[in-house]
Length: 445
Ligand code: ASP
Image (tube, rainbow, N blue to C red; front, top):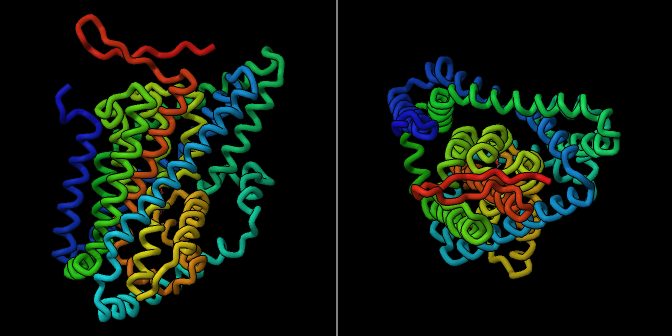
């Protein structure tokens, strides 16, 4: 197949053209035209993806769980998955802390820039502060209470409630296992075909991806730059070191931490992994939402990386909601950066508090654009840094959001291959007589 027919190249072309158009539109004051006529196509693309996320999780998770022969296997896979998720997030936060303490980007922000940023973003800061109220008022066990809905339809009607949908689907699947096979069969077949239909729909929706991505990027640039792109340049020069820390940290985590996991714990080569997962990464970059990207991640991980449906249907929806390495690392770097810029020294105990709260906060961060900065408010409070400090970083948050979402999605995909391999459910790769790598699907017991 010629390169330009490959999905990820088509999306990259959409992304590049969208960026060029966005910059051109901002420079020429076309923001009204862009938001009226271009951006809606991006919203349609994103809505289509969100639309199929809930049916996909229900269909694949119920049929995945019901196909398990016993419950102890489910709890083993569950324990392993959550354990790896928490561990990789802790590694990400710690790495972020080391980087920000070494580079000290906050010390590079001149006093007058700090004051003018705080004035410019005062109103947006107080909006984030009130949005954080909901999270602030939660008791210690609220996180667990939130997983159990009192009404399934209400949970399924709200994309942010994905963890509740995961919980109900698990419960339903467990119920199905208890039934005699002939009773369970009709329902099982329904859920199984539901999952198959939705996976096919991902292919259909992805036909629109290049256009959708073009529109999303053009819309984002317009909304961030408005008709005054010069403002972006001045932000970039003040916050360049901070951004470099976040971007460098994310890159190291993706290449090193996930790289080591892929190399030593799975048979996949980097090329196989990245060419398989690239469309999901590009969609994550343009939508800034791991929730909206979930259907694409599931389709790619199953069809291109060879993870069984049973594993991917459990590990990926869970990961999209609780595993946010990129977000946690960004929160740690941002918290210390703000403290440095405000001239506050953080003690070791405060830095340890950052690790704990960032791991918890990233678990509770919804998989939607801009959620990470709201949870940052909670972290700043835990270490007694004035939350007005987020005014410093609001101006460049969107682009960092796009990048941390890519890291979040890549982390989910990596862990799904690791868990699948450890359960003997990753397609084996063997060399054919001609030396080509061929994938052999595992036979499930
Ligand atoms: N946008 C991120 C995600 O969906 C969350 C965040 O860090 O804001 O993964």
